[in-house]
Image (cartoon, rainbow, N blue to C red):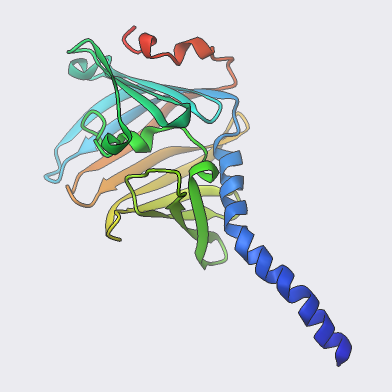
Length: 243
């Protein structure tokens, strides 16, 4: 009996500590999976659907290097061709508007603005590691998934109050994100489908972002992707956005 009690008391603190750090461990594993390539280049078709069912297609090309450099430009439609964004370390974010021939630095308080008529905000397009900016708490778990409540770290100024992230256990892949405002209201969702390995890396070939306020939806379809191509650091420069 004494041995039994000793065993329980010995392992109880370990269990409590394990549960406390488990969410942060999961977030770090997610980072490892989604940021596994050294660099990546992709083309994506975006289908923007308004609340009345009207559709508009766009084509965007995105380059990413490491975890904190990302640049994207619209190739189509013609009236938006050349519109681009650049995400750099430490939350630095630029947008290029060809009609004005102007590169604009986006302030932190303005990152809730939508990018080029899609349902993605500037913050959504930033390239960063989840574990650097979000704290996690497991709020639910089943056989296949963890459900994490992710809240911004104290030094991170997010437009969101928190995000509920559904992580697939087998792959450590975030398959659904629910975004809540600072008042605790669900404002949009992002779901990822057709999660497959391409050249050894896990990718989502189809995603759907729904804005619950406007009733609009943006569907993303991966058209082409390449990894570890040796992308130069030189392209991640505000002066290159308009070229």
